[in-house]
Amino acid sequence: MKCSETKDLLSDYYDNELSVERRASVDAHICQCSKCKAELDSFKSLSSLTAGLDPLETPASVWKAVEQSLAELNSDDSSLDKVSPIVCTSVEYSGKRFFQMAAVIAATLLIGFVGWTLWGGDHDHIEMAKAM
Amino acid sequence: MSVKALSSSLVAASKGYPSATSAEKNQNDHSLADVVQRCQTGQRSSRQALYEACHQDVYGLMVRMVGRQDAVDLTQQVFMQVFRKIEQFQGRSRFQTWLYRLAVNESLQHLRKNKRNQQVLSHDPIDSRPSSTRHCDAKDVLDAALDRLEPLLRSIFLLKESRGLSYREIAEATDIPEGTVGSRLNRARRQLREHLVELGWEQ
Image (cartoon, rainbow over all chains, first blue to last red; front, side, top):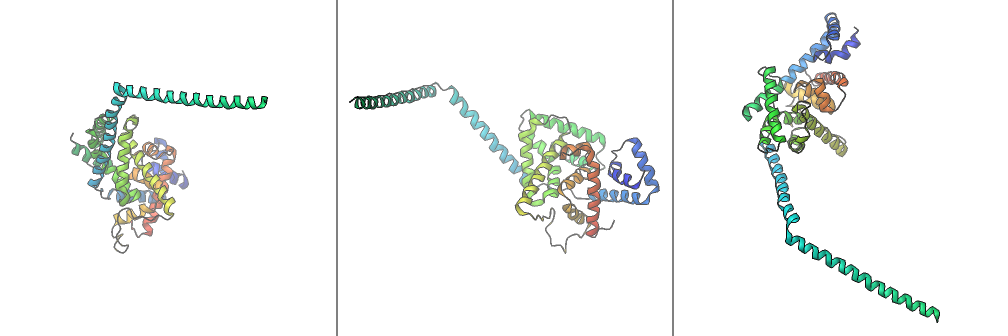
């Protein structure tokens, strides 16, 4: 195996992600190549350095904020739960709604009838004028 | 297992501390799976247990991705997403992989938005001390070098080195093909080494 091939596979080798055969080929190359061996050692040093990073303490404010957002979300859900049965099942509300709808339909019909009458009247008037 | 015990052993397992054997890691995965399942069935009291078990992993990643100042808000957003979308987690992968996917997405989106807004982004993820007093030890130098890495490479490197994810899990968490994880880690490690040397690190 050449250096260029080994370098391409170096992380896979280091992280133990290679098949047994390929691992053996990289192993054989590293044993005889000081450059590739040095690069592998530098990967190991990076790991040691990263492992030494201190764990970071999460500020308590994060959970408090999450908890508050969840509470708001839950109260939105529960307020919907409270409102929806009233809207759907109240007989009183349904009766009022029926009369409102009936009034709107009646008003629309009345306006339509008046409009039709007026327009019809004008039409007759024009027809009469033409005849004269 | 208590919430605190679950939380500390998960942190140890994810950091690769010697105390976390593979048997312990499996046990922790099972305990976490139980908590996740309880959250999925709508048990609100389990949300805090889930948060306690995972917050350090998410916050630690966020600080190194976006800096301390924004890490608080983004960690909060990630957990809100977790609780809203938990029913979508189907258990095909480990819960942590799914969680890291949300966290990496959130941080990359945030960095893209910031880049658009201010073109030049210069944040110090860990420390805002003047440069003369910084870089005094290897950890500070590493943080500064990590900050110089391209965000996606940084997330891949951290998921491997700090969280011990496999290439398949990294691919899933960062939404890249599994076959490219090794080459990206090669790039991340080489660039990181160069930045460290520039910053005065002696191997």
